[in-house]
Length: 506
Image (tube, rainbow, N blue to C red; front, side):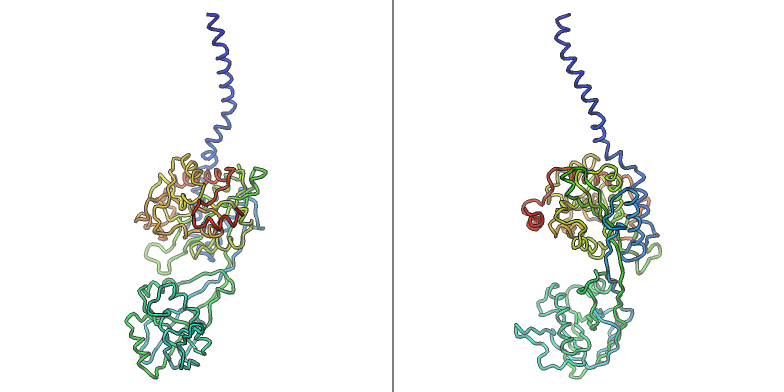
């Protein structure tokens, strides 16, 4: 017995040491495991979501009152959580111009009065013109190539009619690219107005929806609307081409109240959380989400007229706000930029503006984790648009697994989603930038039921439990990337790898 005791005693002492060692580590191990769960009360994402997607915000259209209320709410939450402002009030103001389509547009050629649905005003102020009409082919003048469609034609004081595009084999790119050139030629020739006869496979009605709606642009000298009247006339049957070519003398009357242009301001909302590592805190991970949506319907149905935008993108903005709270209490090693973008739905304008006017140099921004999506049809996954394109893949996979979610790559490449969200504004500058999206297996009817529809609300059809897990997975993904000693990069061969190397000097 004594012999056995002597043999066992050292073993017992060693085991006791191990037990005590593990007990000493237990609090930190437990904290590491429970930190994502512990740091995000379930009421937090629900409250943010219900406010941002409320009817009172009227769909958060860029430049409108509901959008401004959302921006103020986000800034207030940043302040509440202790996020450091980079501007006095967290706002990065963006000057926009809003172009409003004409309320009245009429055209008469000879004895023919054109139906309003067959007319589209591209540019022009309020005018009333009665003048002779001349046909100038495609209306192209190319001194280098020796082409002059105005040869022998006096366009001064006349309404000029031209074929759309540049030749019989036009592509859509050539079609739209020729608009400005042809307008400048007509003005230089002394014309009073330019009418292009539209005959192209792309439906005229869709063209009108694209060009003829209220449009926003960043207010700079290149975006201002020309005062010269320039119209498209739907001529799918070539009847007006026949008319203007067959009549030696033809008069026309054009009347419109023109485009109205308003100046508006909308804000990106941005703050910073300083990292804890003395070296890595000089690098930044940019967390972004757009908070704008598409406003209200111009032709409301009998039940609803508000595009609440719960899934797109109050869900992403909520995740960003939850990240602000968690990281303010427990910062990662790298510093974080928290960017709520305006203007995404009208052309990624907020993120484009920040990428051109960054408040922290872009070469210090090592990664952008954008959060945005059209909706979900599988709550067991998250969909990462660009999962395979950066070296952050493993961190993303492991972080999502903590919450029982599988990260999958883009299942609908035909939708070109990588180029349709704010991440691409930073990718084009070289910053590795995938988008963290709600889980979907296909861009199917379950997605289309809510995507840009008045049904996209924070109501009984919305899965708040999934929102909670989704937000935690987003936060934990950001933490892993921000704590990783090696900054993420584009994978070899990616289209943005060369510009990334140029940005980071490698």
